Amino acid sequence: MNQPLKQVLRIGGVVIGLGAAVWALRDKLLPAPEIPEGPPPRFRTGTAGAGNADSGAEDDLTEVKGIGPVYSERLAEAGVTSFAELAAADVAAVAGAAGVSESVAASWMEQAADHT
Image (cartoon, rainbow, N blue to C red; front, side, top):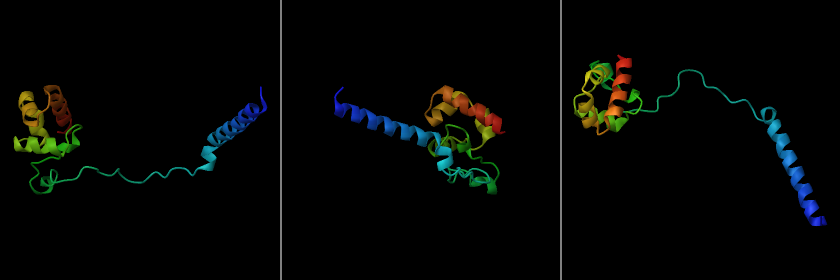
């Protein structure tokens, strides 16, 4: 081998070795992650859950996986505002009101039944 190639390989080996050493010692070099106390934050906010305190008839449908603010609003316009109403509704009616497939609507209805 010629001399410059040997030097490049030697320097590359040293760099890779240092990288491996840092990787092996990363737990000792970095501080432990902080784990927050208390419940996790709520990321979805809005007016959908505002009716809970007043009437008790409305539920926050965004707690169902796959239902966001837009789908919650579409369901509310169709008259579905609680978990019980969603669980008891017709699959085709929920799918049509929200603009989703019947399999998605059925999944929402199963989750809503678990919330009741």
